Length: 285
Image (cartoon, rainbow, N blue to C red; front, side, top):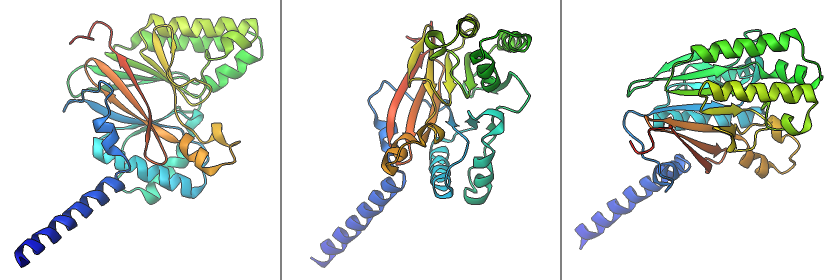
Protein backbone atom coordinates (compact mmCIF):
# COMPACT_ATOMS: atom_id res chain seq x y z
CA UNK A 1 0.00 0.00 0.00
CA UNK A 2 2.82 2.40 0.94
CA UNK A 3 4.63 1.48 -2.27
CA UNK A 4 1.53 2.32 -4.31
CA UNK A 5 1.17 5.67 -2.53
CA UNK A 6 4.83 6.48 -3.19
CA UNK A 7 4.42 5.68 -6.85
CA UNK A 8 1.32 7.87 -7.07
CA UNK A 9 3.22 10.77 -5.49
CA UNK A 10 6.04 10.47 -8.00
CA UNK A 11 3.54 10.36 -10.86
CA UNK A 12 1.81 13.52 -9.62
CA UNK A 13 5.14 15.35 -9.26
CA UNK A 14 6.19 14.39 -12.77
CA UNK A 15 2.81 15.50 -14.10
CA UNK A 16 3.16 18.89 -12.39
CA UNK A 17 6.65 19.32 -13.84
CA UNK A 18 5.27 18.60 -17.31
CA UNK A 19 2.48 21.16 -16.83
CA UNK A 20 4.97 23.81 -15.70
CA UNK A 21 7.23 23.04 -18.66
CA UNK A 22 4.37 23.44 -21.14
CA UNK A 23 3.27 26.65 -19.41
CA UNK A 24 6.75 28.14 -19.59
CA UNK A 25 6.80 27.42 -23.27
CA UNK A 26 3.67 29.56 -23.73
CA UNK A 27 1.84 27.54 -26.30
CA UNK A 28 4.66 25.92 -28.27
CA UNK A 29 2.47 22.84 -28.38
CA UNK A 30 0.06 24.69 -30.66
CA UNK A 31 2.89 25.22 -33.12
CA UNK A 32 3.78 21.56 -33.35
CA UNK A 33 0.26 20.18 -33.21
CA UNK A 34 -1.67 22.71 -35.28
CA UNK A 35 -3.60 21.08 -38.07
CA UNK A 36 -2.48 23.41 -40.87
CA UNK A 37 -0.76 21.07 -43.27
CA UNK A 38 2.59 21.81 -41.64
CA UNK A 39 5.03 18.97 -42.28
CA UNK A 40 8.15 20.13 -40.47
CA UNK A 41 11.37 18.34 -41.32
CA UNK A 42 14.65 17.97 -39.46
CA UNK A 43 16.50 20.04 -42.07
CA UNK A 44 14.01 22.92 -42.22
CA UNK A 45 15.34 26.41 -41.51
CA UNK A 46 13.67 28.57 -38.86
CA UNK A 47 14.12 32.32 -38.40
CA UNK A 48 12.29 35.21 -36.74
CA UNK A 49 10.97 38.53 -38.07
CA UNK A 50 10.30 41.36 -35.63
CA UNK A 51 9.53 45.07 -35.69
CA UNK A 52 12.02 47.36 -33.98
CA UNK A 53 11.20 50.81 -32.65
CA UNK A 54 10.27 52.01 -29.19
CA UNK A 55 8.53 49.84 -26.59
CA UNK A 56 8.33 50.33 -22.82
CA UNK A 57 11.20 48.46 -21.18
CA UNK A 58 8.97 45.80 -19.61
CA UNK A 59 7.36 45.06 -22.98
CA UNK A 60 10.71 44.88 -24.76
CA UNK A 61 11.99 42.53 -22.08
CA UNK A 62 8.94 40.30 -22.37
CA UNK A 63 9.15 40.27 -26.17
CA UNK A 64 12.85 39.37 -26.20
CA UNK A 65 12.45 36.60 -23.65
CA UNK A 66 9.60 35.15 -25.70
CA UNK A 67 11.74 35.33 -28.84
CA UNK A 68 14.59 33.71 -26.94
CA UNK A 69 12.48 30.72 -25.94
CA UNK A 70 11.04 30.26 -29.42
CA UNK A 71 14.50 30.62 -31.01
CA UNK A 72 15.93 28.05 -28.61
CA UNK A 73 13.08 25.58 -29.10
CA UNK A 74 13.04 25.78 -32.89
CA UNK A 75 16.77 26.41 -33.35
CA UNK A 76 16.22 29.67 -35.23
CA UNK A 77 19.29 30.77 -37.17
CA UNK A 78 18.81 34.54 -37.43
CA UNK A 79 16.48 37.50 -36.80
CA UNK A 80 15.16 39.96 -39.39
CA UNK A 81 14.09 43.45 -38.31
CA UNK A 82 11.61 45.34 -40.50
CA UNK A 83 12.40 48.74 -38.97
CA UNK A 84 13.81 51.33 -41.32
CA UNK A 85 17.32 52.70 -40.88
CA UNK A 86 18.39 50.33 -38.14
CA UNK A 87 15.32 50.88 -35.96
CA UNK A 88 15.92 47.42 -34.52
CA UNK A 89 18.86 48.85 -32.54
CA UNK A 90 16.61 49.41 -29.51
CA UNK A 91 15.79 45.72 -29.38
CA UNK A 92 19.41 44.80 -30.03
CA UNK A 93 20.55 46.98 -27.12
CA UNK A 94 18.02 45.42 -24.80
CA UNK A 95 18.94 41.97 -26.11
CA UNK A 96 22.47 42.35 -24.73
CA UNK A 97 21.07 43.16 -21.28
CA UNK A 98 18.24 40.69 -20.70
CA UNK A 99 18.50 37.89 -23.24
CA UNK A 100 21.90 36.28 -22.96
CA UNK A 101 21.11 33.23 -25.10
CA UNK A 102 19.46 35.08 -28.02
CA UNK A 103 22.82 35.54 -29.71
CA UNK A 104 21.79 35.31 -33.33
CA UNK A 105 22.70 37.37 -36.40
CA UNK A 106 20.34 40.37 -36.74
CA UNK A 107 19.66 41.68 -40.24
CA UNK A 108 18.05 45.10 -40.72
CA UNK A 109 17.89 47.99 -43.16
CA UNK A 110 20.97 50.21 -42.95
CA UNK A 111 20.69 53.95 -43.33
CA UNK A 112 21.68 55.06 -46.81
CA UNK A 113 22.20 51.48 -47.97
CA UNK A 114 19.34 51.46 -50.48
CA UNK A 115 18.47 47.92 -51.53
CA UNK A 116 20.69 45.01 -50.59
CA UNK A 117 20.36 41.28 -49.98
CA UNK A 118 21.48 38.63 -47.55
CA UNK A 119 22.12 35.22 -49.11
CA UNK A 120 21.32 32.39 -46.68
CA UNK A 121 22.34 28.78 -47.32
CA UNK A 122 19.58 26.30 -46.48
CA UNK A 123 20.37 23.08 -44.53
CA UNK A 124 18.67 20.88 -47.11
CA UNK A 125 20.45 22.49 -50.05
CA UNK A 126 19.63 25.59 -52.03
CA UNK A 127 19.38 29.09 -50.59
CA UNK A 128 17.15 31.89 -49.34
CA UNK A 129 17.56 35.50 -50.51
CA UNK A 130 16.40 38.17 -48.05
CA UNK A 131 16.23 41.52 -49.85
CA UNK A 132 15.98 44.76 -47.85
CA UNK A 133 14.44 47.86 -49.43
CA UNK A 134 14.60 51.41 -48.09
CA UNK A 135 10.85 51.81 -48.49
CA UNK A 136 10.63 54.73 -46.06
CA UNK A 137 12.32 57.27 -48.33
CA UNK A 138 10.68 55.77 -51.42
CA UNK A 139 7.23 56.03 -49.84
CA UNK A 140 7.75 59.71 -48.94
CA UNK A 141 8.80 60.53 -52.50
CA UNK A 142 5.85 58.60 -53.91
CA UNK A 143 3.32 60.49 -51.79
CA UNK A 144 4.81 63.84 -52.78
CA UNK A 145 3.30 63.20 -56.20
CA UNK A 146 6.45 63.75 -58.25
CA UNK A 147 8.49 61.14 -60.08
CA UNK A 148 12.11 62.21 -59.64
CA UNK A 149 15.54 60.87 -60.48
CA UNK A 150 16.17 59.54 -56.98
CA UNK A 151 13.00 57.43 -57.08
CA UNK A 152 13.87 56.00 -60.49
CA UNK A 153 17.39 55.25 -59.25
CA UNK A 154 16.04 53.33 -56.25
CA UNK A 155 13.76 51.22 -58.44
CA UNK A 156 16.67 50.46 -60.77
CA UNK A 157 18.79 49.46 -57.78
CA UNK A 158 16.04 47.13 -56.53
CA UNK A 159 15.81 45.60 -60.00
CA UNK A 160 19.57 45.00 -60.03
CA UNK A 161 19.53 43.34 -56.60
CA UNK A 162 16.57 41.09 -57.42
CA UNK A 163 18.04 40.19 -60.80
CA UNK A 164 21.18 38.94 -59.04
CA UNK A 165 19.13 36.93 -56.52
CA UNK A 166 19.29 33.23 -57.34
CA UNK A 167 17.82 31.74 -54.15
CA UNK A 168 15.15 29.04 -54.20
CA UNK A 169 13.13 31.32 -51.94
CA UNK A 170 13.11 35.13 -52.25
CA UNK A 171 11.56 37.51 -49.73
CA UNK A 172 11.58 41.30 -49.62
CA UNK A 173 11.66 43.24 -46.33
CA UNK A 174 10.38 46.79 -45.99
CA UNK A 175 8.98 49.18 -43.40
CA UNK A 176 6.20 50.37 -45.75
CA UNK A 177 3.86 48.36 -48.00
CA UNK A 178 4.22 50.61 -51.11
CA UNK A 179 1.41 48.82 -52.92
CA UNK A 180 -1.07 47.92 -50.17
CA UNK A 181 -3.00 51.18 -50.36
CA UNK A 182 -1.11 53.41 -52.82
CA UNK A 183 -2.68 51.76 -55.86
CA UNK A 184 -6.12 52.98 -54.86
CA UNK A 185 -5.49 56.09 -52.75
CA UNK A 186 -2.27 57.76 -53.89
CA UNK A 187 -1.52 60.36 -56.59
CA UNK A 188 -1.29 59.09 -60.17
CA UNK A 189 2.53 59.22 -60.12
CA UNK A 190 2.57 57.23 -56.89
CA UNK A 191 0.24 54.63 -58.37
CA UNK A 192 2.64 54.25 -61.28
CA UNK A 193 5.58 53.67 -58.95
CA UNK A 194 3.55 51.18 -56.89
CA UNK A 195 2.66 49.24 -60.03
CA UNK A 196 6.30 49.26 -61.10
CA UNK A 197 7.33 47.93 -57.67
CA UNK A 198 4.77 45.14 -58.02
CA UNK A 199 5.91 44.26 -61.52
CA UNK A 200 9.58 44.11 -60.48
CA UNK A 201 8.94 41.84 -57.51
CA UNK A 202 6.70 39.52 -59.52
CA UNK A 203 9.07 39.41 -62.50
CA UNK A 204 12.01 38.31 -60.35
CA UNK A 205 10.16 35.62 -58.46
CA UNK A 206 9.58 37.19 -55.03
CA UNK A 207 7.60 34.74 -52.87
CA UNK A 208 6.77 37.05 -49.98
CA UNK A 209 6.83 40.70 -48.97
CA UNK A 210 7.13 41.36 -45.22
CA UNK A 211 6.09 44.85 -44.17
CA UNK A 212 6.16 46.65 -40.83
CA UNK A 213 2.96 48.59 -41.42
CA UNK A 214 -0.02 49.01 -43.67
CA UNK A 215 -0.05 45.52 -45.17
CA UNK A 216 -3.15 43.43 -44.52
CA UNK A 217 -2.11 40.17 -42.88
CA UNK A 218 -1.81 37.43 -45.45
CA UNK A 219 -3.04 39.59 -48.34
CA UNK A 220 -2.11 38.14 -51.70
CA UNK A 221 -0.69 40.65 -54.15
CA UNK A 222 -0.99 38.77 -57.44
CA UNK A 223 1.61 36.00 -57.31
CA UNK A 224 3.21 36.68 -53.92
CA UNK A 225 2.07 37.07 -50.32
CA UNK A 226 2.22 40.22 -48.22
CA UNK A 227 2.43 39.77 -44.43
CA UNK A 228 2.64 42.44 -41.73
CA UNK A 229 4.91 41.97 -38.73
CA UNK A 230 3.09 42.69 -35.42
CA UNK A 231 4.48 45.96 -34.15
CA UNK A 232 4.06 48.46 -31.35
CA UNK A 233 4.07 51.64 -33.46
CA UNK A 234 0.97 50.58 -35.39
CA UNK A 235 -0.92 50.04 -32.13
CA UNK A 236 0.06 53.01 -29.98
CA UNK A 237 -3.48 54.37 -30.25
CA UNK A 238 -4.93 51.34 -28.49
CA UNK A 239 -5.83 52.11 -24.89
CA UNK A 240 -6.47 48.57 -23.71
CA UNK A 241 -3.18 46.93 -22.72
CA UNK A 242 -4.53 43.45 -23.42
CA UNK A 243 -5.33 44.53 -26.99
CA UNK A 244 -1.77 45.81 -27.43
CA UNK A 245 -0.53 42.49 -26.09
CA UNK A 246 -2.58 40.66 -28.70
CA UNK A 247 -1.30 42.91 -31.50
CA UNK A 248 2.40 43.12 -30.58
CA UNK A 249 4.65 40.14 -31.15
CA UNK A 250 6.74 38.65 -33.95
CA UNK A 251 6.78 36.12 -36.79
CA UNK A 252 8.34 32.66 -36.72
CA UNK A 253 9.18 31.33 -40.19
CA UNK A 254 9.85 27.75 -41.23
CA UNK A 255 11.48 27.24 -44.63
CA UNK A 256 11.48 23.85 -46.33
CA UNK A 257 12.08 22.60 -49.87
CA UNK A 258 8.46 23.04 -50.92
CA UNK A 259 6.81 25.45 -48.46
CA UNK A 260 7.35 28.61 -46.43
CA UNK A 261 5.27 28.61 -43.22
CA UNK A 262 4.81 31.78 -41.15
CA UNK A 263 3.35 31.82 -37.64
CA UNK A 264 2.21 35.11 -36.10
CA UNK A 265 2.89 34.96 -32.34
CA UNK A 266 1.56 37.55 -29.88
CA UNK A 267 3.05 38.61 -26.55
CA UNK A 268 1.04 35.93 -24.75
CA UNK A 269 2.87 33.31 -26.80
CA UNK A 270 -0.26 32.38 -28.77
CA UNK A 271 -0.19 31.56 -32.47
CA UNK A 272 -2.88 33.90 -33.80
CA UNK A 273 -2.31 33.29 -37.51
CA UNK A 274 -0.60 30.77 -39.77
CA UNK A 275 0.25 31.35 -43.44
CA UNK A 276 1.63 28.76 -45.84
CA UNK A 277 3.24 29.67 -49.16
CA UNK A 278 3.86 26.79 -51.54
CA UNK A 279 6.83 26.76 -53.87
CA UNK A 280 5.48 26.66 -57.41
CA UNK A 281 6.13 23.38 -59.16
CA UNK A 282 7.04 21.64 -55.88
CA UNK A 283 3.57 21.37 -54.28
CA UNK A 284 3.38 17.59 -54.65
CA UNK A 285 7.02 16.86 -53.78
